[in-house]
Length: 364
Image (cartoon, rainbow, N blue to C red; front, side, top):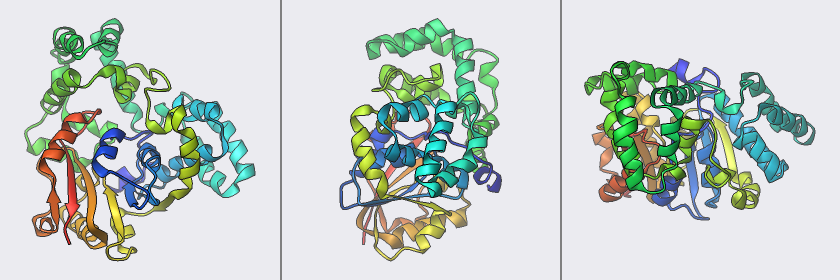
C-alpha cells in the first residue's frame, strides 16, 4: 500500500466518467465536496459544476503536485496554451508553463517544480504507472490492426460498432496467447494489490476472466466515437477538442478559470482529513475506488468518518473494481443505496474499469 501511494505520479488522468459523476452527484452552488485527487481531471470537471468548495485529497503528494499546475494553468494561461499543456500533454509547453508560474505565483511554482523531472520526454500522458495503460493501447493496435481499430472507433452507429467488435476486434483481442495474460499484470496499470487479490478470490485469474464481459458491454453499447478515454488509449490522443474531458473543452474554459479558486488541496489520507472536519459538514463525497485499496479495518474507519461528517441527504459515490466490496454492515444502516440509479450509472460508465458504480445517500 505504501508503495502504491508514494511512488511518484501514478495516474496522469482519472479512470472515472465525469458525466456519470455529474448525473449521480447533482452538484450545485451550495455543495461542499470531498474527493480523491487522483489525476486531477475529476476535481477540475467537478469544479465546472459550481460547488462552493472542493477538497482534493490524496496521500500521494505527487498527485497533488500534478493537480497544482493544472489549476495554475487555468488561472494564468489562455485556452490555446492550456490545451497544448494538458490536452496534448506537450512536455516543452509544460516546462514553459512552469517558467511563467514561478514568476507570477512562486508558491504554486514550487509544487510544480518537484514534478517536472517525473514528466516523460514523450509527454504527460506517457508519464507515471498509468503510461502502461497506453502501452496496452499499443498492444491492442498490434493485435487487432490499426485499420480495424480505426473503423471500430469511428463507426457511425452502435449497430455498426458492435458488428465490427464481434467479428473483427474481439476474436483478435482474446486470441490464444492474450487470453492467458494473468490478472496480476494489472499492478502495472495502477491497480492495487487488494483489488487484484479480490479478482483472484473471484477466480478471475486472467485478464479475459475479468474484462471479457465488461468489454462486451462497453464496446457494444457506448459509442466509441465520443469515448475520449478509450480514444486516447487506442490512438494516444483525444480525437478533437470537443471529445475530451469537460475541463479541457474550450467552451468551459472561462468557467474553469473562475472556479478553480474553490479547490483546496490536501496531502493526507481521506480518513485523516475527515477527522479534521465537523459533524454534518460535507454534502458530497466522491470516493472513486479508494475503499478497495484499504483493509477491512481501514474501510470501516473511512465509512464511519463519512457517516459522521455528512449532512442528512449527502450523496456518496463509490466505484467498486470487483463486485461485493461495499459499505461495512455495521455502517450500512446510515446509508441508503440508490439501486436502480446505481445500475443505470454502472451501465453508462465510459471506461469499463469498474464492476459497479454505487450511489448512496446518508440518512440522519
